[in-house]
Image (cartoon, rainbow, N blue to C red; front, side, top):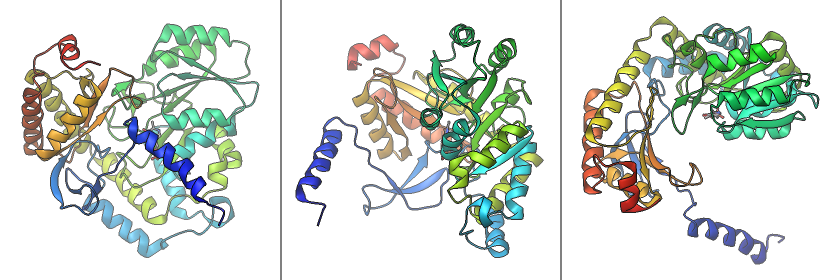
Length: 415
Ligand SMILES: *Cc1c(COP(=O)(O)O)cnc(C)c1O
């Protein structure tokens, strides 16, 4: 047997190292459909506990919506379970083309190509579109999947300080002579819940003859007046050249992603993007579910409007109650605790009180910026939020951090 005790020890040592550094991830097990209330078993096999869910990307509450489930079921009946082929050999159904068309309409672009996930979209798009004569200039806080996608491309890499438009302009000046310059940003940055200054970015792109790439995974479906995303919010629909997004968050939450944008760029992906060419695409059930989602949210903004109201209530309640949140307007609301241990203890106390939220600390966020990231959903009703708010304030009181300044909290707990 080639895998010897010595081999095992190499990995055991590394895993133990992660545990010692507090970086070992353990998963809570949900024993129910994803929703605003879930049954959780932790550790696996332990007695199930019913909790209010404050940490899913289920922004529109569509993960278990009856219309979506019903559409998926129909998809199963009409188009079967799986494709058993990649798209370009014999894995494209009519419904895949329909979904691409619907996404194009919804995002206000020219064309769309589906990927197995947004991670795959980001890993495929740069290599497919760019050459070694080009440069990619990325915001320093872009999602990990973009970082990986950039690594796979031959184009030169550069970055600008988070949302710092002066710094971006300097970098654009620096790379004037490149064949293509691509500015790369998230739409809604998921750790802080802050939106890209997309109107400014488009302005700079026009001034310096650059392209704009945006990953709108944490915005598609609910940011902007009709939920089209950050480009709608910033009034630049039609001016973002490449949008990637996921079907795994607000848009039904199952799986799948896409690249949407200029016709020729999408076609380049169809010809050359390796995660598209060499991996199965989205299963028919998921395609039908996603079509139902787009139908639902194109017909009415009711869910996105409810999410906005929930967000306002939550942000106001936490602030007035004396907790420190990252200011903003999105349904990603980080409650700042600054100290990693405090964030862990806080989350544990919340869980005891029936609220499921997770502490984030280094290396997920910078040192000294530990927090609990809360996320609102249209699936939350007022009684959920009232109960959750009450718990947050009680736990805040227990740890003596209500109506304290950042400095006072750091003096008490350290960073
Ligand atoms: C979640 C997320 C992804 C990954 O999406 P998947 O479809 O689950 O692979 C990519 N980019 C951003 C910004 C995300 O938040």
